[in-house]
Length: 194
Image 1 (cartoon, rainbow, N blue to C red):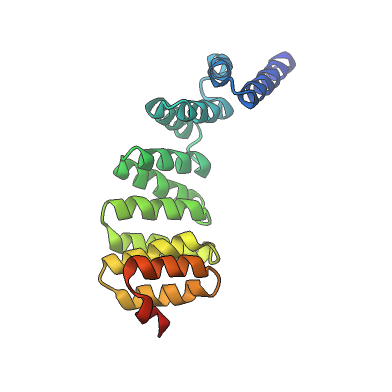
Image 2: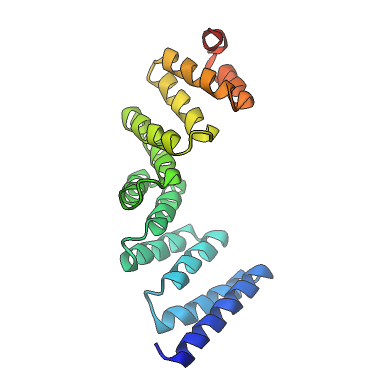
């Protein structure tokens, strides 16, 4: 890449950041288009395009940009995670699952991808698979209540109240409000006291 082209690209990136900062997302999107005109596989431009389109309410356009991004950068887990997140939000659960699985294959320590995978599996009522993903999430983020909360809910859905009660007792040690919420929602207050 020539020096002039590199400097021009950096200048456009700065313009995009400034436009976003001042709430001018449509104009920022136009500048992103300028970057993509030069290089249609520009990872920064594709990711920024997806982000801006999502913020502007064009989820389909954002999803297409993310699909282009993962095609251009297939070994980058962040693109796959974002595609999974957006697909799950759009109710495209099988696509979300596939994207989250790819993200976890590329980076097995990406806890939020395991959590996203679990949420897409829960929405598909595939609770056994969701337990596996949530266990991995809670292993990677043992002090985050989100994975534990969902894991307890899945155990309730699987008719395993004893397992859910164990999680509530565990959560009580570091997130008593979440534990209390689970007790109320599941009716396991007495069982979790034991």
